Amino acid sequence: MRILSKIPVFVFTLLFLMGAGAGLAGEVIQSQEAESVDGIEVDLTSVKMKNDIVTLKFKIRNVGSKSQNVEIPYKSCFLMDETNQKKYYILKDSDGIFIAGPLNRRVGGGQFSLHISPGKSKNMWMKFPAPPDNPETVTISIEGVLPFEDVKLPK
Image (cartoon, rainbow, N blue to C red; front, side, top):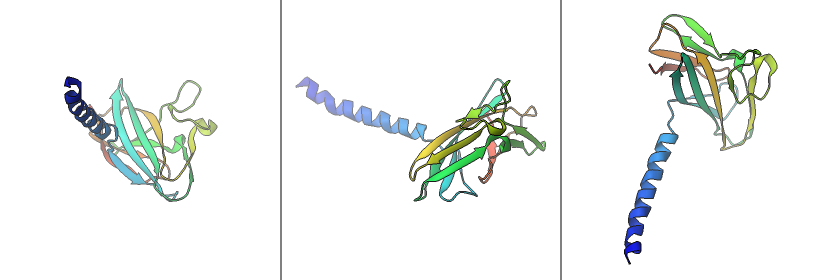
């Protein structure tokens, strides 16, 4: 009998923790629409700074009714310090390949190039040098996507 009386408490606790975790995992800092591909939206999900490197994570979602091929050349992505009017491009490794992913093609240093089915999403990440002037906010530019403006940088 004692075991049965503990099951509702266990189930309630489990459901509560699952709900709390789902809220944290799905945090979206800012969303923008793609300018060049119908039905594609991009969510900025993480901005972290460590060792003078800014790491950005995105979720690319197909909210349309048709499958889409999404191609983003990493060479055209940048972080803009508007306060000091300076641009920062994605870091490269010693072979000249952008430190970003997924890296589906190495042409021009690499690019994101994936097929996204309706209702599905793909993740993307990029690493930038931290702006040395420590601006409070930056603008993130990804080719074919409206800009992510006034993004706060962690200190």
